[in-house]
Length: 452
Image 1 (spheres, rainbow, N blue to C red):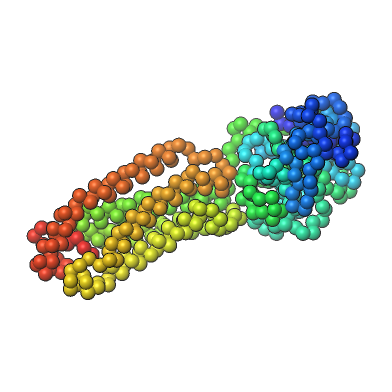
Image 2: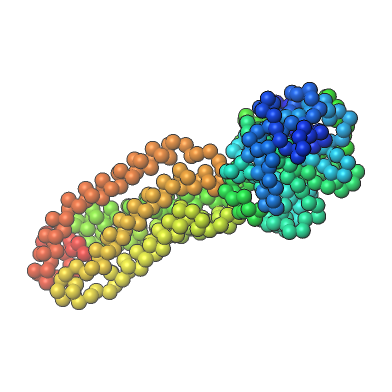
């Protein structure tokens, strides 16, 4: 399969040399629709599809995902060019005088977000050509550069100007391809290039759109000096058994998710349940409550939040650009407010409590805010599992086991808490006896003191 796709990539590049059928070179014939160009015996290029005359600008070229047909691979015999494949894409190049036509073709091993190649052996300081399809059917070509392992930025003055070939590109079928031409640097030969494949579409046609970190990348060798023959082929390992290891930012996301879930939907509910169920049975309930909510949960939650921020930084994606990130910051701030409020309630006793024996309003706020934080945390975990992981990494959806556990836990926690409300009559009875005896901070005949 890979050998055929490599030849196909070269065949598509050969369209750059075919004589156009119409006046502007882009109008098509519906009779050839669906042919990718390696089966036709004609040496004349014919672009088919909805867009007969795509428009070009500095930011994007509209191609409406048309399929190009044209010269067979036999038309390449005798020309200089080469092709090579990775597990995610094939890169083909054909020399045409002073220009080279490059084709990047997805192998359908992962969703196509964007594809890129750079002229060099490392990401740093290599001129790059990055392309991606847009929702309106257009294609964006962005020339970029970076001096480190970070998201490359637009190069306003690249050493060679790349030109998108929308009539040769195709966004349809299982193996979409993006084609461009660029001036040659001299006699064709062996060249080392870098490639990258992103599974998340930038969501914008702007050349400076933010790119989510690639799914995979690396250096490859492409020999453009070889003479293409009928036996030309490219060998790669099969994709069916290939497993993409987690990238550094994805590992941080996993750690962020684990710590956040442990902190927000395990430890915080546990601390709330300790307060709800044990306060009428022991004076030690508050100690257990604050140890869980502050001593155990705080380090876990802070570490989880820090890893989330670091993952965003590492991936090169913007902060606070979606609902999950915004809600996550809000929940974290609310948690910090809750800790401060808990300390205020415990150490600062208003006169209404010490003299009038009335429960201060902040006690009620503390209880309601705690339940709100836990509810929002459940929502955050849900969006993280169902949407954020996919949007950020481009990987497949997390297995259904996570959904099952979430559904069970989102039922168990509220049921356990509201069942504890059955102890309210006992709590109120203890407080009345405590007030009538005038005791402060000691147990009574009906049980421990329920308040802070």
